[in-house]
Amino acid sequence: MEIAPIAGPVGGISPAVSERLVPRSTIDLHEGRTLAYAEAGTGSPIVLIHGTLMSLEDMWLGLVPHLAERFRVIAVDRPGHGFSRRRGAADADLWRQAALIREGVRALGLERPIIVGHSFGGALALAYGLRFPDEIAGVVALAPICFPEPRLEHLLFGPRAVPGGRFASDLLGRTMDPALLPLLWNAMFLPATMPPGYAAANPFGLAGTADQLVTEGEDAAGLMVGLTRNALAYPACRVPVRILGGDSDLVVSTPRHGSWASQLIPGAAFTLLTGTGHMLHHQHPEAVVNAVRAVAGHDPAQG
Image (cartoon, rainbow, N blue to C red; front, side, top):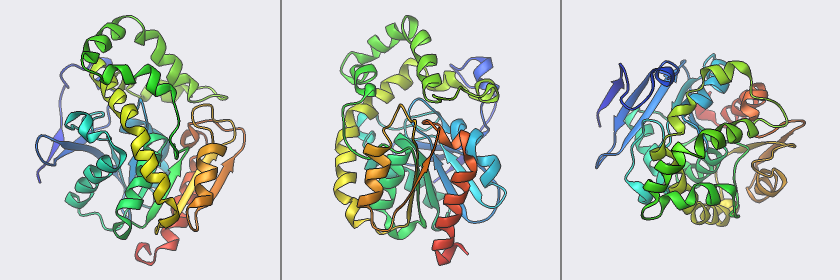
């Protein structure tokens, strides 16, 4: 597999967005698929997986400054997001995305990484641990979606993934999306407000293109099946799991998801963060660091 840096201006992205991008490299997987990533630090490996309407910058801005002091941190663009390329809806399933990220992990030579995911990325991190338990040290899931349910993503993005949906996504990109997407990004931080530094640094335009929102529709359409598979496998999970959730999360219900899943997963530990919404990795990065260190301490190979 070939690894190459992404450098210089990026076609189709405005200069304002390009200036906010974290420098990346890409791994060629197979059949046109790629995995884009950025890394920092040295030590035992951590893989960071972002959620819906985001790119790797979200995890980078929230966690890398704290984790890179002790670990080698690799933040990835989920398959089909940011600069990671996938082959349409066939690669939207959680377990399929886990397999694609695993290809990148193996190409980088990472040994027993801890997989850290937020929201949809938390569901993906759990799928990774359930599918490849002997290859990782454990999972830290932040505000994860854990069980199938009707979600706002199905209504807002699902129709964009049907035949002809690309045309609808283009139309909405010129009409509704410029007002809708900022509302959604800000709502993720409720009951707090989006930090000014985050608002200035995150390349929101990378996640808000018409093509990207078709990908979000594909993810939404495949979510039910992947979460059902996750839920059925939780009682057989064989890796250390730490789940963190906010008591004021308006995006993913902590009692219905993270808390309940922690009761089904053998040995899982659950941390409830008070007065905290969905973007807990920005509000309480120290809690995430503590969870990662707990998983690392649980695994003799992590030292």
